[in-house]
Length: 113
Length: 112
Image (tube, rainbow over all chains, first blue to last red; front, side, top):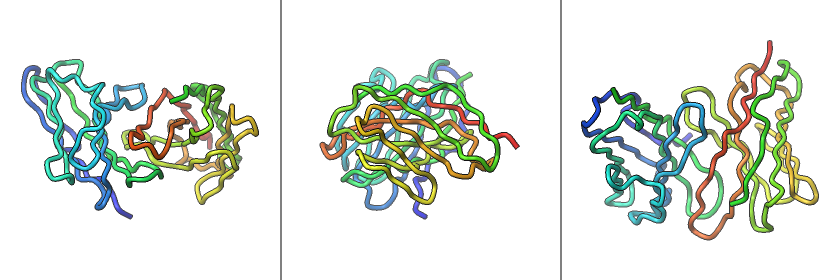
C-alpha cells in the first residue's frame, strides 16, 4: 500500500534554532497538506498545496514558518526560529485531485527545549 | 465547513459492536461526512465517508440519518487494536480547497 513518507520521525531542537521537516506524498497526488497537532488536540491545517502552488496558508505563522513544494512533488516545512510553543506533531497528508480520503504520514514529533 | 459534536470518550467491550455518534446539525447539502481515526503516535487513518446513503467497507459501517443531522460509525466486532481517537468531519468535496477540519474527536477504549 502506498504511503506518505515523512522525516525525521523525531526532532529535538533548542529554542531559536532552525528546524526543517520533509514530506514525500503518494505518487500522483497533486494535493499536499501540512498539519500541526498539539498534544491532546486534533490536527490543525497549516498549509495546503495544489501541485506547486499554495492554496491555503491562512493558519501558517508566516513570521517564522515557511513551506515549499518546488516541483510539485515533495515538500519541506521550515521553522526559524523555533519557539517552545512549537513543540507538537507535524503531519503531512496527500490526496488525489478529486475527492476521496487523505493519506497521512506518520508525522514528525518536534520537541523544542 | 459545518461543526461536529462528538462525546469525548467511550468504552466498548472487545468483540462487541462499537457505535460512535456524531452530531452535525448545520451540515449543508453538498457536505460529506468523513471518519478518521488516530492510533497513539500515528497519523490519522481514513475509515469511511458518505453523503446521505449508508456506507459499508471492510473497516466499518456509516449510518447517516435521513435529515443528515447526525451519523453513527459502527465497528462491528471491536478489537483491542481499535483503541484510538475517532474524528467525525464534514467537508465540501469538489471545489479545490478540500481541507479537513478536525475537532477533538472521541477517545474509544476497547476493554478486554
